[in-house]
Image (tube, rainbow, N blue to C red):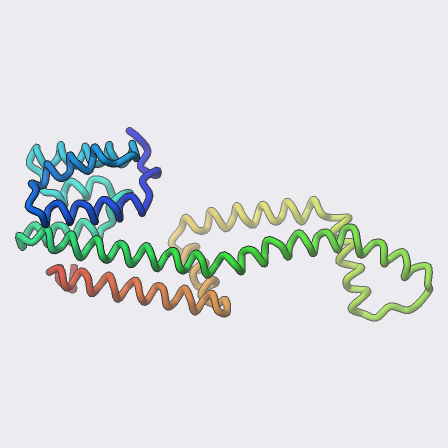
Length: 234
């Protein structure tokens, strides 16, 4: 099987928009899927669309066929398509779904763009501080030692940090790698994801941005589902 991790969100957004347009224009469902399968350049997605065609032709509903590819089609998409098929309004539901996916994709791009600047600052600051501690501070330390002047506490702390980095850089590097590995493992558990999300939400500015994005995504999802005929309980 072709790995589905290569199917991007933008592929799904474009597929849903074109699919909605074709169904709205009166094209049969299977014919629309075949056309979209031929037009896509993504081989993994073409395989998925081919599976949809086969499943629909052998008696599955479109929602049931999409549900067999959870790494490509979200539960939201599957539930909305199921509601559209039950109500006989698949073209309308696909239009709403494509609009929702486009807005969600735009929101995700805005969040990523907002995080680029802090990431760049962090990426520049860490190497800069490391260079100062390893190469620059030792030079000043030699000058201070020969002058015989009593150094203030902040200066002594910086010199001590420089000496620690030079003597124990290997331990710091190993500790950093171990911490990254532990965080990656923790993110794979529900408790770890909860703690990581709490930590992110507690960060000034970034936490507020992520919270607003989550609320916007939730309300838009709920509104789209209810408008499409999916019950609140579902």
